[in-house]
Length: 112
Length: 109
Image (cartoon, rainbow over all chains, first blue to last red; front, side):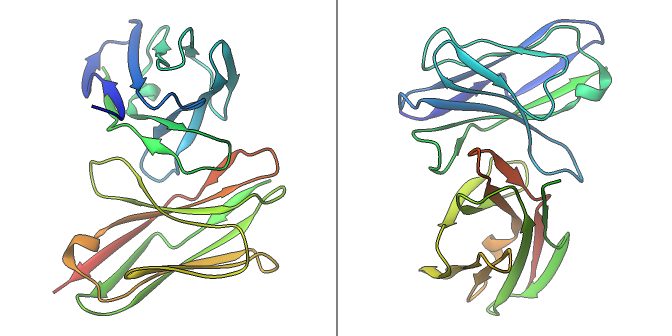
């Protein structure tokens, strides 16, 4: 099916573990984004990508790593998870710079 | 700095009209977006304004005044399914989206 999918939907991990959140879109959108959403905050941008092999830091990049070897995939890795990274993570994509974002269903990550 | 302000929570009655305001201060302006987010779900796009004025889309309308740094989302004939958070986001001169914290709208029968 066309769309943007994230996996897993839920993840519990321990402090210090590495965890990767997956994001896949089938529209061939150029732009992809990773956000985190916490109570009391708006969506905060972690990393974004304008095209394959091009990534840039957002507002809160520390502790995260991304890659984009293929247009359709944009995985987010927490190298050594901390409790402060407990959050809901949304991946999004858009075709051009000022077009609306299409969001995945989110990954609820708990770091214990 | 850049910021978006919107009320934290609003309550309205089924069948009524509600207006959710958003004020912004950003470095440049390349459009304003409204998204709806039901609890536990992803945000979904509602409207986009780049020129001053009112954009109407069914029961939902969005207004923009660039000179005042102000927008509102107007919801008419409220239904219980409109209970959700409404997110205002502004695209700045670098095409970066600045997000408000969202307005939680509670609809009462």
